Image (cartoon, rainbow, N blue to C red):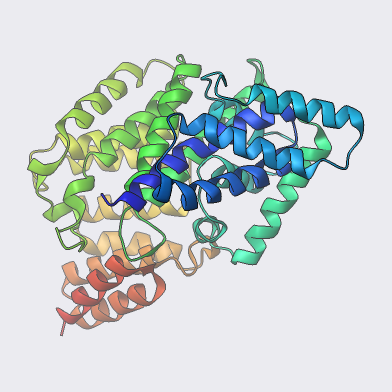
Length: 404
């Protein structure tokens, strides 16, 4: 991995820790985030020339805090004394405390709408750009920028406490949002919404790291364990998903010897330890589906009937167009491509999937399987036009050419 990519990964990991430290000490979320962004920029410019400091986290906290001091220099003497105290605390002896999870719960505060909770957490903790978040939510970038700005203002006006909420209904709701955010970060890394590369390992790695921390915080929560299992079992296939040249390799053609046995073992153990031990949730079911894929010796040996049964359970407890699309694939594998196509037809009028290339891509694949080459070609080309991922575009275009 190149030095810039390594630096980017380090800064991405440290950013939420630094922001969490400043918010815990100072309480000004929006001002703290601006200061952290300036510190990250300073690091990106200075470290390649002069080398990284011995304690990068303390360096970033110190620089970001000085930015805060500069920002509030014109405030009252009381405020100046407070910022001076913060500056004194942010030296080389800064406590080695990761405030990332507390920051996650702050961003999932109930004063925010669910979309704002997701957007703010992806920005502040996940390190995604506004453009990447907009792509994940399928909205224009200016709209997402406004949403994030309003979320920061709401946090400031609400005077939200920084510590994570005590156990109870409020924490359960905020924990649900936190899990969803981590899942979105993972998905953006596993299949990037746009750009030259199919995957962004730094994002999937960060999502897994944060989910491990979350599980440590709530060890008895089966859905958090299910989410971690799902990430591990899915990420286990990462190396096999592309050729050495970066071209996409579909699941049924992947070299399974490249799959990570270590991650599969850990993921399956988590599924076995949690499934059926309490209320079942969507992440546990998805993890069970992923385990069936990963434990199969070949695509032909996959237990598609069991996968279909699990998708039917998932559609009952967590219905949605993406679940229906995945169930259509399982239906096609057990009952034939025409049965799968009939199910996909139910998604034709669903506005949530308008412009989503995956519907057209799955439809194209099933049309090809059913022998409708010309219709498959048109669907592949339509899907290629809708995706902004270069590897997906190339793969879908190549499949279209094979239908001629």
